[in-house]
Image 1 (cartoon, rainbow, N blue to C red):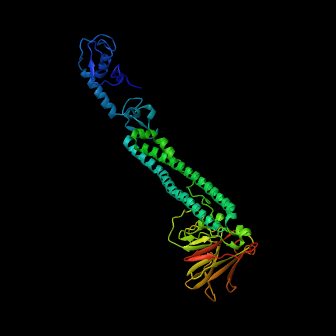
Image 2 (cartoon, helix red, strand yellow):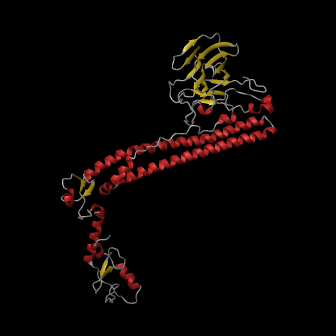
Image 3 (cartoon, helix red, strand yellow):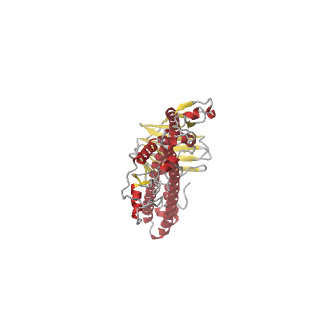
Length: 460
């Protein structure tokens, strides 16, 4: 609402502060340009207010009014209206610590502020800005975490697509060997792959949208709070309470994390592919008792296209999904076992360092020193067995092994190792955990899970 002084300094034509005011003989004043436009629309040089015709075409400048207008405009720029006390029209110079609001010197001496504590505006603003800045830090950290996680989500989305393309290539390669009557099976499996890719891509889009909204919310909180921090002291202090309440609501949501099972289940599409159609093409069937899970492989290990062998490579840029090892140079079988007996042969060949066995589903794949694995290993010409948390035990082996057979009896809770070439027993663990167990391979070279012999049904 304009003050009376401001109303008196407004031109009756444009209703704004006078610009180059001129004075008519009737004593009314108008902006020079406003009067010129007014007269341009009339037949006579009449006053816009009283309609008296002016005797002069060039009325003189009203210098007193012009000076008043210039002074008023200058003071309005230098003293924002928000810096004046609404009660006493005095400049707000103090901050009442009891009421947490800016006041003028008249307010300080009023009954309303009897025995209250005061600080200079600048001092109070600086202290409150520091408090607000400190409260803002968790929001900045959360925003930074979300931005970093967004990069991982983007990488995972690209990896999903790359997995789908690689899986499609392998599926087509195998189906090419099965000729025309397998076209229908090929189409079915590709459709399933497409569906999973679409589902998991959509899921990833939803997760990314959730992350985007989180980033937007955090960004908005940071932006609004930083705008408050950049505001003039009085404006800042007026909005301080709301700003503090906003940032003190520390982000409660958990840090974003790539969800388990987000990647394409490659093993489901490629695992035992030829075996699943053995009844039509059993001469071409190749059945692997263990299908390796590339989503669990350490970044320096590459699983073959048919998911039966693994080799050491340069570090790959792979999503840090929950299933993946980040410390042990290992890869797991795609399927865990809880009952029955299971055997698989691994070709170790001339590898200089390897470990074979099983790990429990509860085994943590991130970091080192976890409990829940039973294995046999070879290193520096020695063979050793180990079950965590016990230390390794060197065992005697008559000759250098080329292949190792792993036999798991879930019901009897035993894990045995033997030489399939000589049928010689090497070692047996007893009392393995009664929970889901996964085949486990650790290598510095290249190892391969050998195919099992198949007939009309799987050999047990």
